[in-house]
Amino acid sequence: MQPTADGAASWRGSAEALGPGQTATFRLAAPGGRTLHGFIVNHHGTYHAYVNSCPHAGTTLDMWPNEFWTEDREYLICATHGAIFGPATGVCVEGPCPGASLDRLRIERDGDALIVSYPG
Image 1 (tube, one colour):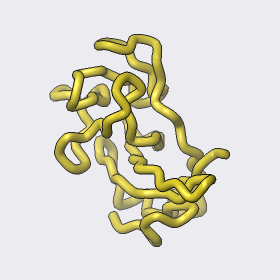
Image 2 (tube, one colour):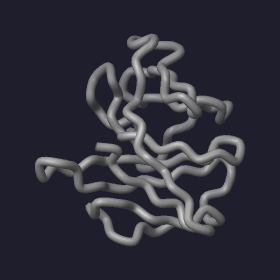
Image 3 (cartoon, helix red, strand yellow):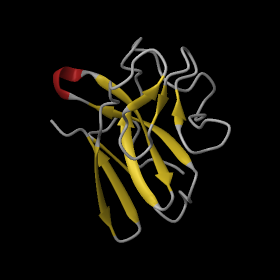
Image 4 (cartoon, rainbow, N blue to C red):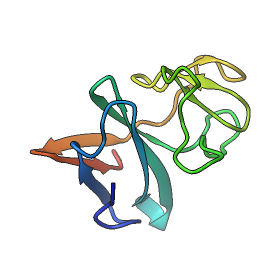
């Protein structure tokens, strides 16, 4: 899945290309000239997008590019410290930061296009 512009104010990708259980990473321009690393996940046919930063350590979740799933592919995992997150909520359900949440990004759908942007 190719973004329309890496580091732009929004990311656009094909919903059809992001099947159930698949993820994609991207970068977004954020306020203050910052760049946010993000990812989108299709969990059982529903799309969710988050900032790619563990609330426990601030590291990216994927130690290997675009690898976010636990072995059973039901939860998201931080490769650094093993924190487990619900893919639909972004809430840590197990590990060093229970109850903490991933920062959610806004998703809109325009036909087949998924458009992810910073909510601020």
